[in-house]
Length: 237
Image (cartoon, rainbow, N blue to C red; front, top):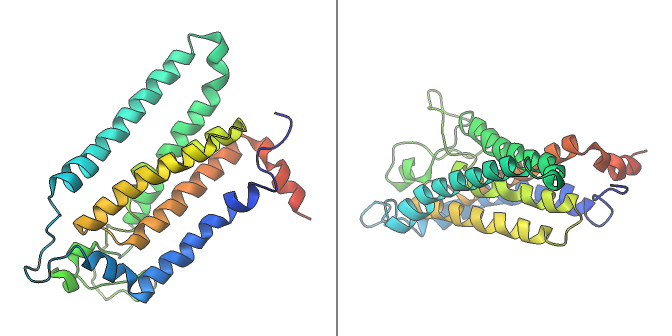
């Protein structure tokens, strides 16, 4: 393609806007909004999470969400195989490969992050009848504290990984890229809020997950299509 899809209109949105999520995530953690939000779903009288095993949040949005991702992967596989039998569709092989790698890499990075932090699920915290201390991202970690497994939000990444659809449509200058963005945000929010209602995550966990998924998709997009660096290079002295 002769001109870059990343231009002065798309550049600020693509590269900088998601970083506002970092500030918002820190604000939620250190203002108490994280604790306030999830406390709405905690029964303080009975000292339990009444929706933790609710059929909608556990069976449909959690287990069902995992199935949704597997079905989507199967559709991709069938599409990738199918285009190889039609000469006029072979040109889409590269973009399908990009979509696969971007959609898989983001949750993988989120998974690595989950195993490197001391951030715990709300349902594990002493403030919510658990046994572990509430530790924020930049707080000192008490000696002997176990590694947490809640930050960033893993299940939500199964929805936000589809932010790569934005870049798929962007490559072809399609106005439908906004639908790719909305699709991913709706699925990610559904998965993420379901986990917050169950007591598995704070909102700030999901915000960082969005950031990781977005910039993973962007980085791979630029690796797959180095011609898109044209506009970025022109901005540099």
